[in-house]
Structure formats: C-alpha cells, structure tokens
Length: 284
Image (tube, rainbow, N blue to C red; front, side):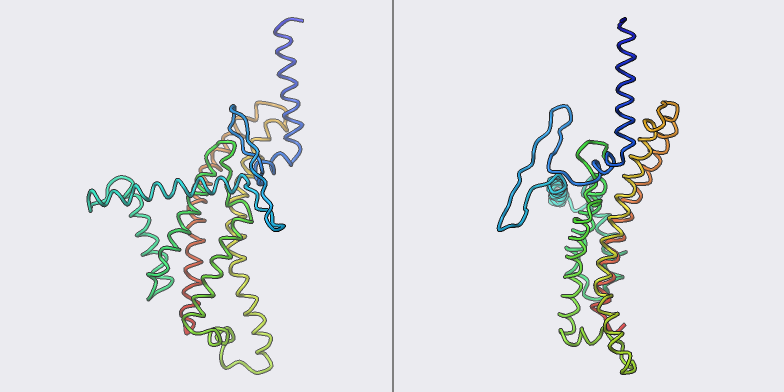
C-alpha cells in the first residue's frame, strides 16, 4: 500500500468520523452547555474542582471560570481608564472609550427611564451593562472555552433575579410596603374584579424578570447554535463543495452576533431601568 493510499484512507476515515459526530445534534449542545472541564487547546485540559457544602453543589464550572475571567478583565480595564484621569482630565484612549459608553448609559438609558433620583442606580446599571456586554463579546472569540456564558439560562436567571430584587426594593422603599402593594391594583376598579386584577398584577411582577432572563438567553444561544449548524453542513453533506457557502453564512451570522451582543446588553439594561422607573413612579 503506497503512502498516498494510506493518506487517502486516513482522510476518508477522518471525514467519516466527523460526519458521524456532526449528524448527532449532541455535538452542538456540547459547545453550548456548561462543563466541569476546561480545555487549553494543544496544551491539554483541566478538571475543575467539585465542591459540596451542606448538600449544595458549589462546583466551579467552565461558565463560572469564564465569568471570573471576564470580570477580572473588566475591572483591570476600568482601573486603567480611571488612572487615565489622574494624568489628564481630558480622556484619551481607553478612558475616552469608557466615558462615551458611560455617558450613553446615563443619558440615553438610565436618566430617561428612571427620571429624578436616578443617580443611586448608576453603579448597578453600569455594572449590568458592562458585564453583559463583555460576556457577550468574549463569547464571540473563536476559542474552545470562550463560550457565551449569557447563553446559560442559569446566568441570565441570576441577573434577572438581582434586577427583580432591585425593582421591588425600589418600589417598597419609595412608597412603603403596603402602598406599593396596593398600587398593583388600579384604583376605581369594581369590587368583583379586584381579586382577578390582583392575581394578574402579581403574576406580572414575575413575568418581567422572566422576560429579561429568556430574552437574553434565547438570543445569545440561538446564534451559536446556528453557527455550529452551518459548519456542520460540511460534514453532514459529505462534501467540501458546500464549505464556501457554509463558511460564508457562518461569517455573516458571526458579524450579526456582534450586533446582537450590543443590542442585548442595551435591551437588558434599558428594560431594567424602565421597570425600576415604573416601581419608583407608580403614580404615572
């Protein structure tokens, strides 16, 4: 058997195995779902620690590791931007970049949505915006472990729960617990309809954070599933001739994902600010 024949058979076996693995949809979910192992490419992989405390699973997973990494990068960049103002009050470079975004969040999102008394909410809204934006952007880098953590419903649910607590705390602090709860039912309603409206409004309190959670999760995970599905067409159809179309559409979706990453950070922050403003100004 000649070397060319061996090479051809090896290539055929590789293509066959790739086709078999790509025809199974679980290979896509492997890249989307969380994992307890992190890979360093050709350097190998590492098993992340498994922790149990009082019966609760507190294991460090790949998504948690990435969130820590993204948070560390974000803190370092913000510290560098803050130090830039010590050298000059005129922002330059990275300081100018962050100032533009902060002014946008303040003047276009938080201030119009919350209105008077928006200042105490700026730190939380900026943290929310930058964290979601950086997590979304890091997930677009084509490396094995830089998956989009906002495609994990547990992450988006945690963000939504924090926003829910802030929203309810705002309403109760501003108007008192009883007055805030009474405001859930519009005044002037017939007595027979009040119990129905109370249940509807109570459900509405929880549908707001639920919508925040599902919107961010669904939009981010959908793009990645589409990208992997397009790349899998090369192996599913058993031909390289589909590669130009598959790769071309993948690049298009990747560019679209950059826009989606920006929009989703904006939408989550904007809706959170809007719900806080609704709880703060119930008279409107």
